[in-house]
Image (cartoon, rainbow, N blue to C red; front, side, top):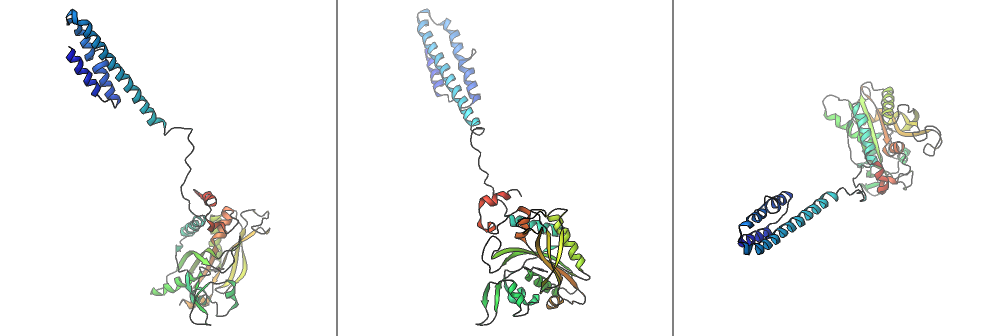
Length: 350
Ligand code: DAH
């Protein structure tokens, strides 16, 4: 009997209780009323009278030992369970800050412009930012030494020879892509209508301030086909501003001058910030200029090998920063390039 007690003692010592199921097995085997220790107590009656007391004592110690192991293991399992569950749902912990990136506001607005024009059949075209004088000026009907070239202060990259006009420059507008698109269509045997918008970055040699920057973004538009008229230009731009801003936005076409369009117009919309009450964005006029536009000058069509007697087209060019300013009330052009996350975060989910 004493040997049996010793054996069980060792068994208990070696038993590692790591799970609830395991603990229950332990309980049934040693602690429970039908367990082996209880059985030994039953058998105590058969032990000779003179040994019974000593064996009984051993059995009691064994029983206490088993009980103690059981209790210790069950509390430590319980604690481990609490640790596991309580840490992730501790509501007193500070909130983990949201570190998701955001899209840049200009990217958001550029995409909105692309989507709006995309829905009415405009594709998207791209062109180089380092451009030759011909694509940026010459083909667009800016004669050499014409004062209209001074409308856009240019960064020149490379001069052909000393004293000669620079040939390579940073494009001052996205109108260069118009020329490339029209030229490209010469590869087709028959004329295919061109209907595209051309988003891109442009550069001008200007001091950086809240209202001017040496680098900004435009979206150019071009539609060339038979029988394209000024009414098509008006319709398209009116549709665009209603989609981009509000259904009740007002639009006006102001006569203007660009070498590459005839007639030309600048496009104003009713101020989306003050809604006509007067603010410093519309300079208290209630109107804000968003784009230049016009009918493609016949000279420009001929420069690209398109017969102006047969085809006509309209073009427009708008500033993405200006449209973003009106959509989101951004007042200082420098905010777009400073990468201040307090500014950028405001566009999360926009
Ligand atoms: N390129 C002009 C600018 O940067 C904007 C512009 C005006 C584009 C009239 C056009 C247009 O396509 O037809 O100031």
